[in-house]
Length: 293
Figure 1 (cartoon, one colour):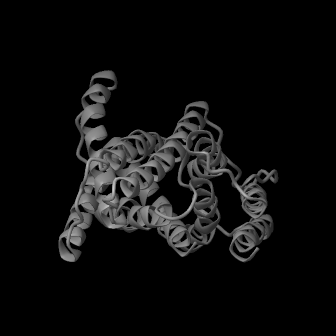
Figure 2 (cartoon, helix red, strand yellow):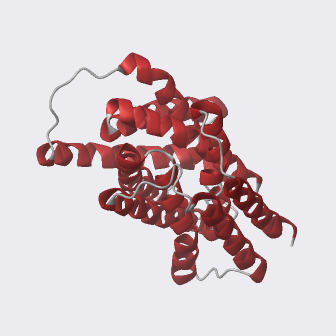
């Protein structure tokens, strides 16, 4: 529970920084840069604490990274480029939580208990109340391609979480469990491999006009999103997935779009609607249901 909450806090900060860096550099360039930085940070951390023995089950975590940090985050960053920070976070986390729970139930046979079902439902209800306003003021921007990319990101997050759960189960069964910090590094390496494969195809399909990118202006946002997203955030996510069901973890991480609201208020001076505050309190209540029931 603590690890999932830390993931939500990290990813809420990463959402703002990711949207800013994507708007400055372009989604593909910003995502590639943050993955490289985060992989370097995690490699140093693994070397500092001592790497574990990566057995034959390590490929599960690489595959998780290919699906989540590679394909899923590519879709997420392209959605950020089109829709800003809030809507892609809503689509990714609200659809990712129930999808992850269903996939783990189908694949691993890990069903949800009543408190978990109630908690997930309350969290998603609170998030919907907080973000789906009808007052027309600063409402959600609708873009078909952006919404589609957000849903693809949700699928990537859900599948990658269940693949990580399978990886932990396989590692324990083989007698060579993998530390969650090592799993986070393996996941990032998988994301980098996916980026290396996709970028040439992307450049062929949609070649960019050469331009001077504002790297100096984007540098603080890149460092922040690298640390909070695929760095500390993914490490905390792997910590959570090592012992908790994917659906429960993702339901807690789904607090990200609610936690983004005060950050947007602080950074962009966008005052939250009272409905956002009420929805946020309901979502936090859903977390409390799962923690205390």
